[in-house]
Length: 238
Image (tube, rainbow, N blue to C red; front, top):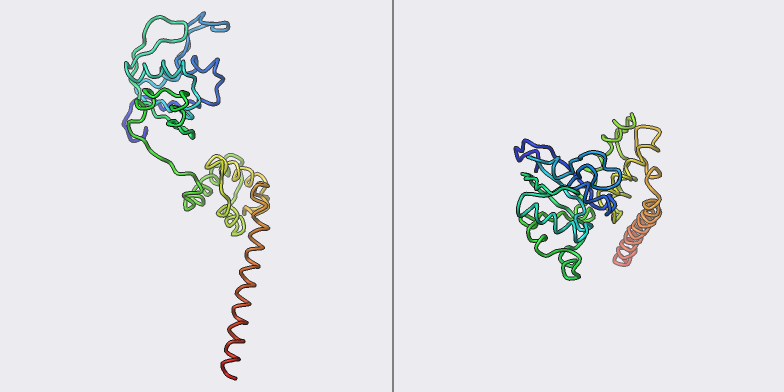
């Protein structure tokens, strides 16, 4: 979205759940010198750094009610104040927010502001979980193999059929992040140019045994059906 928008400013991501609440307000809005112990100089926050560009707030459902109020002001008035400051700073920034939580349920529990929700919910995009779009698993896996080949100076060329079957059968509760961690681990463990089934995490190893059992059962059913057909044909002849 940012790349195609023609924005002149930068893309600034901020993971809301990864920053302690006591530091989050400063990370988002910045602070002025002397605002708190250790604030030895002025420092811009993510909102200020994204001027003219895009601010991406990941896991926005984790921000505190106090920060929600201040963020609402940014969206409505296009202005904010740094922590410890008194002068409003005007800003021109596109805000994109993402969350894995049910914000409407949080509104009902009074954990998320309704007015902020509707201010953000101008153009919602629903991203299905990875298990609901299994056709993407191999595309993403190939992308991550290429990424970690470069990072760890490896030369993985393909993923074995057994490993593919295990990945396609798994339910991926951690979605794309879990898949990326899985491929990173497999890339590190692989000694040749192929990712094998035993290179995948223990959470997928149990699938290997179940897949073998299912294949054996399928083979046994096929054999029984063939034998039944022979017996039936034999009875027909008699």
